Image (cartoon, rainbow, N blue to C red; front, top):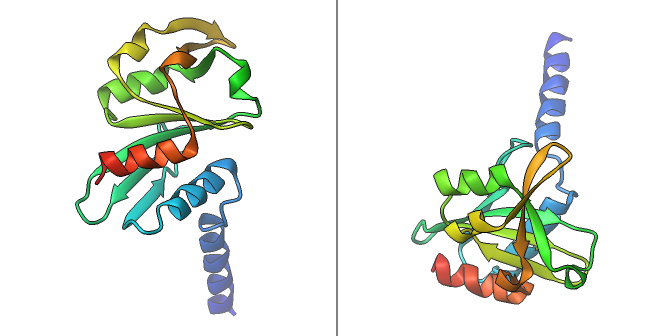
Length: 156
């Protein structure tokens, strides 16, 4: 009886850790890996809910990699002149994740930009007690296909 209880407990714990990803980040991960299926890429999602970045994409042939911070937004990005990102995320890229892509996955398209030092010069405001940068949309790239092309160039 104790062995049965132990086995059931173990299986429940494993299932909780390996739940099918149905959240927005999981859907994005599946979409990106599907678009890169000819490539030998691996994509690892951070297990820590409050991590500064969400993913690392690794080319398994040469171990080149790029980090990603993904934001699902229920807006049409085309209607806005900037995109928000928490200051601590940009600060952590400066320190730890220099090759990082910030991605805003909006209703109308995917908007993205690589981390660069100029992002620290963006408009900074406090919203709900957090410092937030407003990244000018003129600096941001548009399109899922162009994102894939860029990733392929960086980790090729």
